[in-house]
Amino acid sequence: MISAMNRHRLLALATSIGLVVACGNERATTDAPATTAAAGAAKLTEVAMEDIKYDTTRLRFAVGQPVTFRFTNNGQIPHDAFIGDSAAQADHEQEMQSMGTMDMGHGSHGDGDAVTVQPGESGELTYTFDAPGTYEIGCHQAGHYAAGMKIMITVD
Image (cartoon, rainbow, N blue to C red; front, side):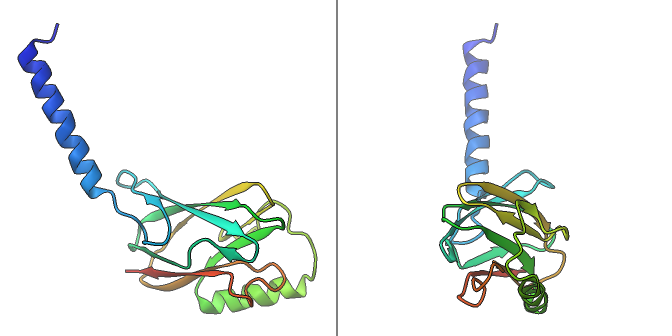
């Protein structure tokens, strides 16, 4: 059995650990909720998709930190999320326009940097930003990116 003194020490230790963990929990941005994971594990960032917008417009992450984005489509039409710099976004927009109204279905576009999410569903995409800079997440369903459905990401 644990003595009263040892129980007190264990409680103090658990409280101290809880305070350290709580103080070390950072948000990826003031715009979107995120949780900090253990070293080497992916940081979870929740993003809602609504009509022709994401629920956040700016995020910030550290170089080398794996990030799992959980996209939830609260809208009535499919949305996608493609991660890349502005040149990659322009290329992807052109590619999507050339495909016309072809349904991309549910899941990845096949390049590991994108996910399509149907109405009422969620999808995840894990990405590691290997270099500092400015990136975007853009929805390239017909007209969405042009209407401003994007998130600016700063990586430092």
